[in-house]
Image (cartoon, rainbow, N blue to C red; front, side, top):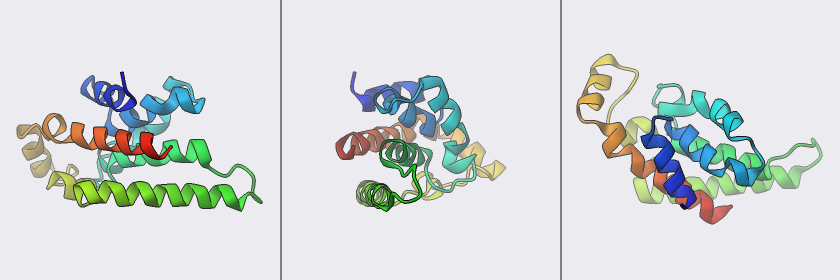
Length: 144
């Protein structure tokens, strides 16, 4: 099973978008899967259901940071590599989906009760979100 298939599978089983993406990559990053699920939990539904940056995107950003992030203050090269990969990911995701913002991607605000109800009725988490999870994982797999 590819990492994108693993991510979609985790999402369809009930983990949020950020958890799904990060957990699919966690073993190859040396991160325990349970730790990955906990670490990324708050980022689902556009950062804790605030509909900001898509959780699939933030899960990818976390994976990039775990693999390439700076852990020593003087290591500017790692910081620049991390930022560059985040920008590349962002560019590619936007090219495919026009935005990295959950509100824009879904066409509603999950923090608003009326919009959340519409999203539920339209089953957006089952009809459109899996594609964002898949895309994020595919792009991430390509750039890591």
